[in-house]
Picture: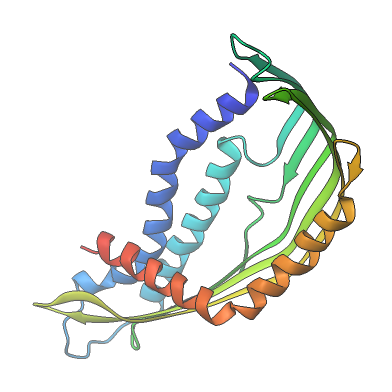
Length: 245
């Protein structure tokens, strides 16, 4: 079994745990709801602190789960692969990969976590400061329907500052239980720095790739920021409501 296959299996095993961890962060909003009726009750600061502590712990657990899954750091020193159909002129390939590295996925910075029992509002502000991808060398050669194909690549991509701010407002009632009033999401991408070298069949596509990754992708994300936030709000609300007691 290759390292990539081992990591893939690890991701599947961890996905259930990850879902539970993130659900816990938002279910923390409803912890006090089990005991708080609709009439006003005296509430101490310690109650709010317990909830925010649980959310902070859930974020720490999420970061650790990413590390445990082998995703940060993710490093392949060297790996080779090859395959050919029984009639290789139709399809065959040989490939190798050296020094593939990814870091930063577990470096979750918490800028703000706050839950107000009085207003039933959770505010969460988290950031991935830097996600780094790089490879020392990658090369593949093969044949597709008698056509020779050769690809080589190296370089790095840095995703700078993925930041998400979430404000969740809930309603709490003795009979109705906990319901989501509104969710506001603000997703921001700082920048993407691309320094990739790519050649396909002897032609250099480095500038094309770097322009696409470093300019087109971040510009497109920023241009559709409103729609991305709207989608995240819909998905997040569905996830929270599916896990509310």
